Image 1 (cartoon, one colour):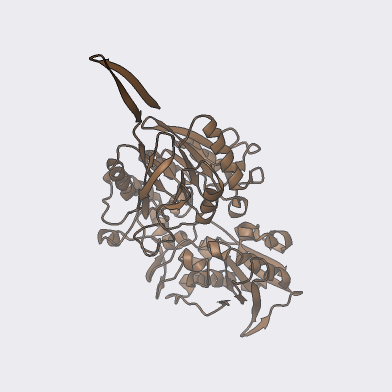
Image 2 (tube, rainbow, N blue to C red; image 1 turned 120 degrees about the horizontal axis):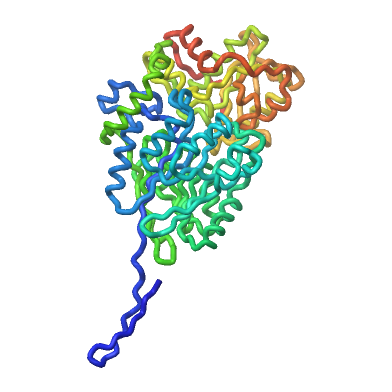
Length: 526
């Protein structure tokens, strides 16, 4: 809006120049991939003891997040707090409370919006609906058709408009296009390409006169950059899913904060409550983004724990104590479960889970274990191992699944497993009873797997494409999760209802205590 006025002063005409309305500034506070980490975590993203927390060695936790958000809000007079998805899954708090604890915490923090992450579907649409009914802010997802899902139809919106500081801000949700492979949304929901989905919502919002658009995306950093390059009218993308660290000061960052694609600012704040994103943006009076600056806040021991939230988390934790404090084993060294390692190469956590799975069912004629790295959610430090530690690594309540498969299909499964290494997708295969060599220079699904050897006693032999092998994995992967459709379609004599994976691993650790973590070259990259 521009104002021109004419005044007569002493018979002299005075023209007052057009004055632009003051620029609109907004601070976007954001989290993503919190994964039920209500209590402080270690530098390995696993549990952190009360003693270590007192000594200042821990990060995150809901009580620190309350303080960090409060302090960030005090630094500005105009802010919103949004989330990039995956509040669900990751600790006993989710196992026990499902989405109820997350809803309570997010309401306390007064979030303004959230997108649906793939893990919000882990227990089906009904649990997501219960969470949505409990929260006081919009939960969004633009690139899916939920019209045939009774729990979500007419409730889960693609976008919304909020007001802050006298201006309208459009929020659009985005979730992984392959959520049907990553979680359990059911067959009634279909997912679609993010670019046309987001563009349609931008156009609809623009038609309503909304010219400040923020996409809440749980699709990963690469997809966010792609969306930013292809969609017009998006000012900010608040990301999640890939657990990407963006920073201007941390040498481990995958890119700058924000990463600019044209005039679109892309941000993400790693995961697990270790960081609070803090992006300061300015718009001109036509809604153009003129400035985007900031840096994520590290939620470490320098951030005080809010007493009220600390007490509430302690109260919520009481029913969990007996389960998770049980010491099940001891490790002689760190068991490496970092996603950046396990989703690209052999890792000691992958070997542990694969070997434990195979050992449990070897007497059933099973000779090969394939473990999806996306199922490994943390490392375990040297020393005592509690059931809580195991559950933090394996939070999904999966069961062992056994089946038979031709050697040709085993190779096809491994091809799927190494097809998205560049994006650190969770399908990367950790193995036991088998070793393989792959070539990253080959295009995905075009023959990256170069050699597969199967163990037979103390000997190794090249896999026989025509032979039938016995395999073990978890029920999620056996059902086609993480792209392993060959397991779902071609499995022979499948049985998906074995013992729980966390129990199998805890028992194996106990039988081999003190456990000696190892890697032995079973996965080779050319």
